[in-house]
Amino acid sequence: MTAEVPLVQPAAPTEVGPAGDRGRTIRRAIAYVFLVGYAILMLIPFAWQVITSFKTDQDALRLTIIPDPFTLQGWETGFLTLNPSIPQLFLNSTIVAVGVTISNLVLASMAGYAFARLRFPGREIFFLAILGTLMIPDQLRFVPVYLIERQLGLITREPQNYLGVVLVLAIEAQQLFLMRQYFLSIPRDLEEAAKIDGAGFFTTFLRVMLPLATPALAAVAILAFQGAWNGFFWPLLILQDQSHWTLPLGLFQFTQEFLTFWPALMSVTVAAILPILVIYIFFQRYFVASVAATGVKG
Amino acid sequence: MTAGTASRGVRGERRAEMITGFALIAIPMVIYATMFFGAMIYAAYISLWRWGLRGAREFLGFENYEDILSDAIFWKAVTNTVHYVVLWVPLTMALGLFLAVIVNQKLRGQTFFRAAFYFPTLASSAAITVVWIFLLQPDGLFNGIREAIGLSPLFEALGFGPNHNWLGNSATALNSVIALNVWTTSGTVMLFYLTFLQTIGREIYEAAAIDGAGTWQAFRRITFPLLRPAHFFVATLLLIGGFKLFDQAIIAGGRGGEPNNSLTTIVLFIYRAAITDSEFGYAAAVGLVLFVLIFSLTLLQRRLFGQAPSW
Image (tube, rainbow over all chains, first blue to last red; front, side):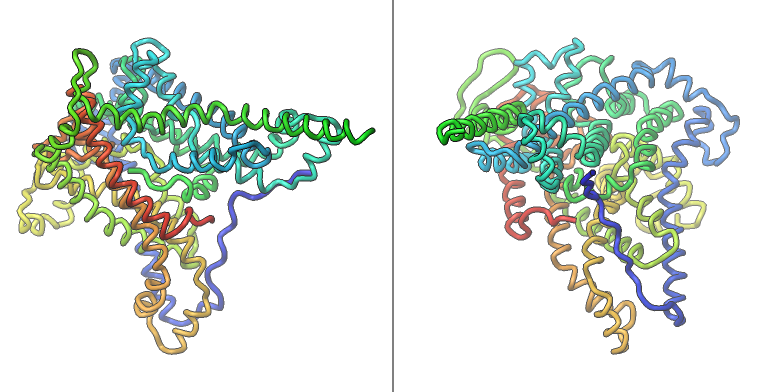
């Protein structure tokens, strides 16, 4: 038996009754024209970026849709000439994002379970404190965090530099809330059964509760990965060596240095956006469900 | 089994539960204690000092805070940030609401449109900003398209030549970033409004239709007022987000917030004070001032709405 609780409620049907009157038809036509128009408008920047990545530097300044000549020069520059190259940037982004994802999965599920199920003194106060961290935005704690990480030796040119970024994002309050909420929704009988069989609290968590929480774990993994992959602020502060730059940080630095090699720059932007687009296409419902939790990016 | 062993068993289990509980929350709590609460106390402490990375430190008392008041660039940053918030918040709300109302109708492809309009929020802000910079180049696509569809006379009348450098001109740089963020954030706002819209019953519209109300009237007299809680919720959320503007500003304007500090926001100002100038005490002081501001806004939001509504 599995106690799967859906993360996303299906959207309620919004219209009743037959469509017939002229007013509604006209309204619909207008709505379609707008929707299609706006969708095309939204597509243009993305399309233009892909098109430009296949143009030559001179051709990139012309407003033609078909690259003439079609060339892989931009991508070649991105893969071979840029320092760090696209594969290196991609690897760095992956290291940071996977580190953040694993850390959030482990820590949020453990703490989420404790807050949902275990009784220990100070539980409410600890939970309130975590709620309180939401009041302290990253943009305001970076000065002391930067100095603390310096003291810890994480602001460095050595590989532990990655750890500096992962540490800041290691356990995001939203992910902890998400896990706690999900554990609260699982019926208690299953744990009781495990306990009667003599399992301890940790075993119950690991063997019974964690497998039941797969949908929530998937949501945490996807959201944490997306956030860390796109992250710009902390990498900018913490990653010292060029060889550690992530895709967003590389894009920033390249933009400051050479604004004219558009095809190469656009190839990097494609590399930065594409993985998230793929994840979004497959796991859309998780993102939509999380809007409430994650709020608005600055 | 005697009563004694049973109660010892229960006590033992209680202890095990307690220890497991503490063990499971230990690492997150240490991280929160140092990287959030400890960090803020640390920031308050160093804000009273001249605090560089090396060299002598000097106790200043509240001098850093006094210096803020007479720092022209700080006020430029405040002006820019307020300018940003004042335009970005209502424009994003308007576009988001508009999209939500349209997408809320039962239309073919509704799911696709929702998904497409939301995507810019999820894509890398750095990548989107770089694409935006490219589009807004003097000889870029935006200027090309407005020329091609005959809008240039209109822009000419407003004082923008055919090759206007949108991000390179201090009069238009900030507004160009606003346009970018209205576009990307409106998807999130649309989703917020959609969830609220779906709580409004159909019956009320049918009643209005019987009374002869048109589409626009129904929107103005029913939908818009009924969305009041949503307006407040979205407005405070955007307000808080707006004061944190950084990524797009530094990518488009560099560390200097070019041109001419027109893209220097409060957070960029703090970043520069800390990382470029190594004036950590001063940076911490500015950070705390902004913290108090955002904290009050957050409290206001929580007071008005409690926790984020669950959907």
